[in-house]
Length: 145
Image (cartoon, rainbow, N blue to C red; front, side):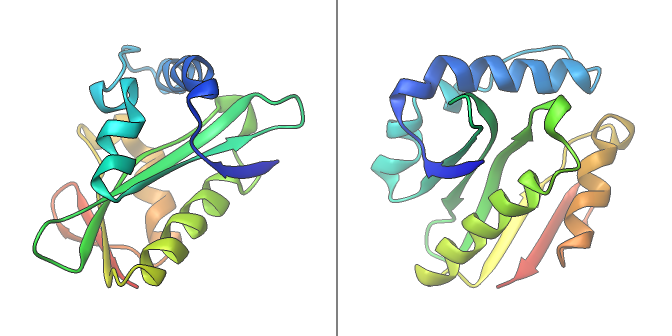
């Protein structure tokens, strides 16, 4: 597995993977509008987005972040791992990549919105605390970097 900065050559595979991931969670498979134009929604804003790609050059995970204007904080977005690839530390590797980059760019706090209802996002509610995140208000967690 390789973690790389997003490249448009992987756009369709990324979208397909996210739809599959949502379907596996029992959610209606819809695509988040920011994923349709990663360059504009992340890179052009000075933020970042990564892909986890397997040995067959297929997208098996993703993560991005966007800085909160006027602060030294950022929100983590779109941490997805393909259902068949879960429990292989891919999500942890993606999160570590994002956190390391954020620290290097002077971001001191990472925040994440977990979604509702809690039952549909149960994996997120157990994943983030394992990585040092704490809930500060319903459906939101944060970590000092």
